[in-house]
Image (cartoon, rainbow, N blue to C red; front, side, top):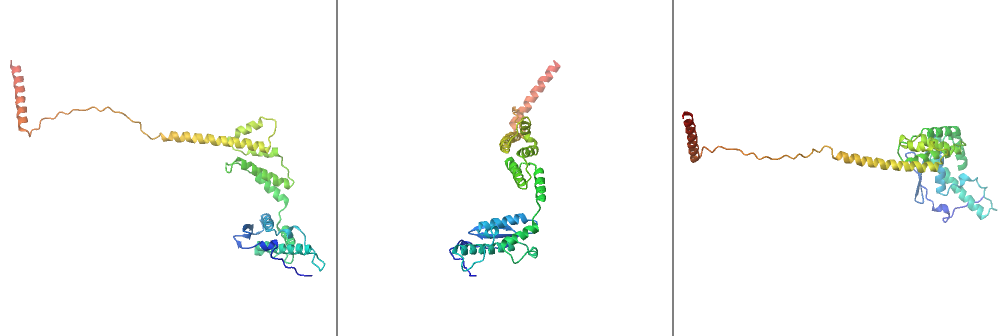
Length: 287
């Protein structure tokens, strides 16, 4: 058996792989592309496996996970066989390192140590994989417990229902589009009652795309109506609290002031006039 060194101009010479564990994640820096993997804790096997497969494919190092180990090299091996063997061995080392570094230490004790990456993935799958019945139960529960609360828009709400439908179909649980349409309509708030009435009054079933187009149009109309009501209320409130203007007629009042006693001439005139009036009044009484 001969040793073969990967030349610097091969594909893997361009890959820079840095592993570090921070907050239960493993982050790869590959050609300036960051890929994060959740650390396997036991209950997140499905997510961990998806992250591993995605990261290895991004690094062009997934060949050892999807193909069997090539036969050992001999003196009769061709250059192509040597290249394939070198690429596979490099991929196997990267995959093993990535998988072992992304598993909690106390979970490694039950795993094989002398194996290839594909065998290690199989062993981990047998240990932590969840039965399809459990997946079906959780997906059905999530689907039938959905309620639209206005967040994210009604289009996204129905698309998430379709996503559950697709996942259930992969597990051999086929829910028809008509069932999804009924489920979506039954979980919409009362504001969409006109859509429900239109659907129930027709004999033909709607497709999911038909449903999405109708409820999205209705949601846009409801938003416009709410905006108009808000503007009207804001305009009405702006006139509250203002007191009406009252117009009062100003009547000028004249005040008669007695002459200032400090003025001697005025005082004398006032006294003389008073005596004349008194004398005149007395004469009239005695005549």
